[in-house]
Length: 216
Image 1: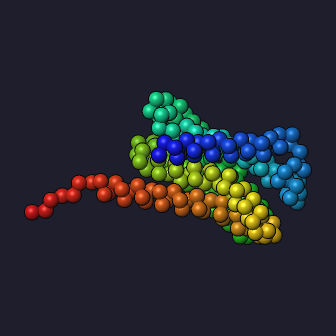
Image 2: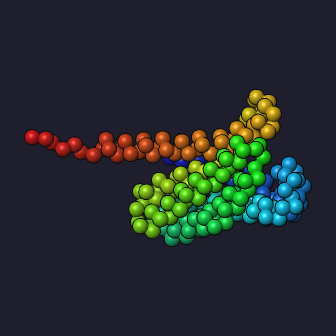
Image 3: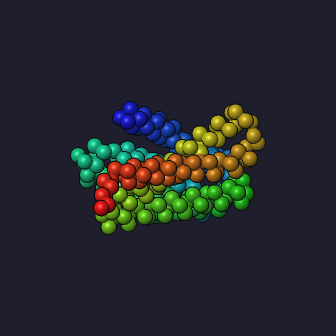
């Protein structure tokens, strides 16, 4: 189990570094950089462009928060770090990058299929994070953990979407826009289903551990 945890940390660190490289392309605010090359129809839309930059520059923090929010040693030895980073994660998603992502979803490439995917992703991301925060306030930490896992699974869609996109383009050679329509859903749905399966397995194991009552 420890090996799996360290492997997960290494993978998150590697992809966070790659995300940082992507984000740095936009520091100059060059409207021909990276992804913006295929969004030229919306460059003059200041609302969309502002939402794009907000989402790009604030989303990396949500990824990096995973290093503290799911570390048992940090939670036990440095609980204040866990709490403060968690609060910043919630604020980031509920008030900054989540709403910006939702607005961008209405302008997604690929037509209604992609737009529905990104709008659903933004709404679920916001809802799961909101429920995680409410559960923490009520000190229902089991529920808090479950919703934080769901929230972070959707945070990881920033990584998994790109992995799916590169994989489908390399191995299948589908047209770019068809790939985009597919990965809009593949980026987050499998992540979410994996967490739900994980939580279901944990609940079943907990039920199995409970001592059975003797009936006379």
